[in-house]
Image (tube, rainbow, N blue to C red; front, side, top):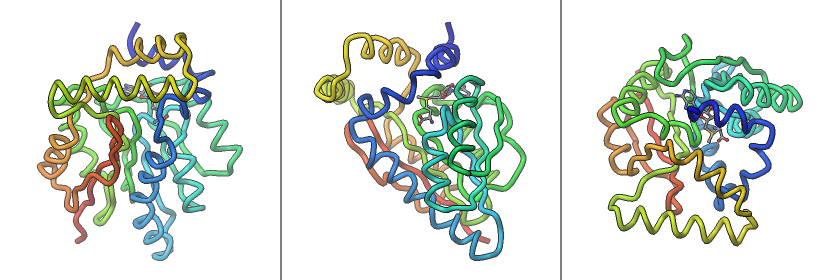
Length: 233
Ligand SMILES: C[S@@+](CC[C@H](N)C(=O)[O-])C[C@H]1O[C@@H](n2cnc3c(N)ncnc32)[C@H](O)[C@@H]1O
């Protein structure tokens, strides 16, 4: 089974476990929203509909939060798992967030358009490091000048010892939040496919791709929110 097939099979129950499996859920997604908001407000002020591309959008958690933060924003949700996107479409329709669905692989050309923000949560770590670097370059190309990219991501520790510590802390935290063995086993099954990279290397790759104001805006063990801005004209 591929990782996309695992998510496809889990689409119906995916949302129920999120707050347990991401112990820093509110700060993690909240920071990603805070980073994405300024260019969306700037687009509105210029009389344009703000455009957001959500990569590996899944059931639309991040899309819905961004749409709520700046009403009127149009979100394009891209994911390779149609069942995840079907749940997302329901959520966004219920919340009145204008949206468009794209079933596609992250390695394929990005949907045409100029985006004020490209956002992603817990998806880019499914690509190998060459794939991440290539994606960061392609994201830079589809942003408007001044547009931002923010990646709320599961990252590797900078050393093997720290990576083991990240895993121990995560297990302790999710157990304390009530994750049972079945939930932990299912998460580990999906995570067997993960290819996370340290946040420092990924920030360097963003700079190489042409981004400015690159930073890690939030980090709690293996959960990090980082990104950058395409320079203005
Ligand atoms: C952990 S979920 C994150 C979903 C959502 N962004 C969130 O924060 O809840 C990862 C998503 O990435 C998608 N995905 C994994 N590899 C992908 C790929 N190569 N191309 C497109 N989507 C992919 C999966 O289908 C899944 O919906």
